[in-house]
Length: 464
Ligand code: C2O
Ligand code: CU
Image 1 (cartoon, helix red, strand yellow):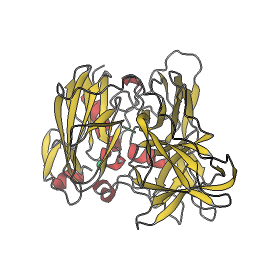
Image 2: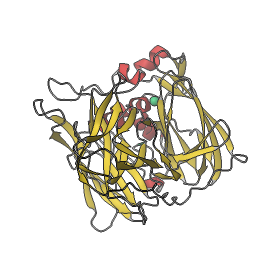
Image 3: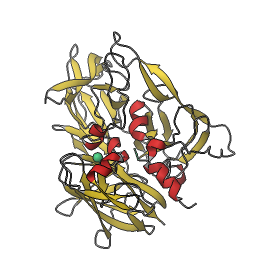
C-alpha cells in the first residue's frame, strides 16, 4: 500500500477531514463492539449542567479492555460520531496495520462505518487506547480508555486500581467544552490545558482502603496537554513500571512523580495512614499547592505488619539494549511556538513566513517542516539500532511519543535509561533516545500535547 499525497494531506490538514471511506470489514467471527458516540455525562459537580462528551460506549473513560499477556484484542470499532475517526492502541507494540493512525496506517473510519481491530498483546503492562484523527479534539472530548495487559505472574498485592488522569476545558456556565479546539492561542502555547481535572471521570474520586493494604496503581495521563506532578500522602511505595515496561528493580518513591501527557506508571503502594484518616494521591497545582487527585479513606486494617519491597516484574519480550556504537544517528530540531525562534518553515513544499504559517494553523516545525510529509524523518532497516538527538529549541515542554517501538533515553554519561514510549522534554532542552527499529511499518513520532501535534509537531519513520 503506498501513501498517496492526498492521504497525507488528509492527515496533516485534519481540520478539513471529510474524505474518509469506509474500511473493509475482515471476515472474522463476532467481535465485541466498540462504538464511539456522543453522550452526556456529569463531570462537573451536580449543581452544574452535564457535559456533552464523545466516548467509546458513550462513557469517559471508555470501558477498560483487559487481556492476559499474549491474548487477543478484537474489537469492531463503530463510528457513530459526526467526524471520521480511528482507534490507536498507545504503547503496545503491535503490527502496523492495527496501529489506528488515520491517514498513515489506515483510512479514517467514516461516520456510520466500522473497522475491525485484531491483534495479540505481546507486552504486559499499562497501556491505553484513544482516537487518532483530529486527536486534539477527539481525545479532549473523551475518546480514551485503559488497555491493561496482565502479567502471567503479577505482583503480590491486595488489589489494583486504574487511575486515568484527565483534564477538561469547560465553560462552567453551560458545562460544555470551550468549543474551539483549533484556537491559535492554545496551539502556539502549552496546548489545550483544562480548567477542571478529573480521575476516571470523577472530580472527587474516593475509594475506601485499609491500613497496610498493598495496592497496585496503574496511573495513566490521558490529558491532551497537562503535566501531572504527583505526590503521595499516607501512601508509600515503589515505581514498578513506566509506560508499561517493568523497571529492572522497583524504585522507591521519594518526592514528586512527574507524568507527562500519554505517559503511564505502575506503582505499588502500601497504605500507611491510620484508620480514620485519609490517604491521598495529590497533584501539585499551578500555584504549587497540593490538591487531592484521589482519596483513600482508611476504614479498616488489612494486616498488622508492613511488607518487604515488591519483586520486579518480568521484562517484556524484545527488551534488549540498543547497540549505541553501531547505531544510526538522527537529529530532530523542534522549533516554533510563542516566543520561539521559528521565522519560517516548509509547508506544502513552500517556505512560508511565521504569519503565513500561523494563518494555516501551523505554529511548530520539526527539522524546518511544519507538516506530515510523504518523506519520513528516516528510512530504517529492520533491526537497525538508532540514536535520535531531540533538540527542543522552543520554550515549551513537549511529550514526544514514538509509535510501535519503545526507546531508552541515552543519558549524558552514556548510560541507557528505562524503556519508554513517551519522553517529556523541558523547554530549551536537548535529549537523546535510542531504540532498535524492530517493528516494520510506518510509525508516527509526534508531540502528545495534541494541539502541538496538530499544528506542526508530527513526523514519522519507516521501517522495512
Ligand atoms: Cu497516544 Cu500518536 O498517540
Ligand atoms: Cu508539544
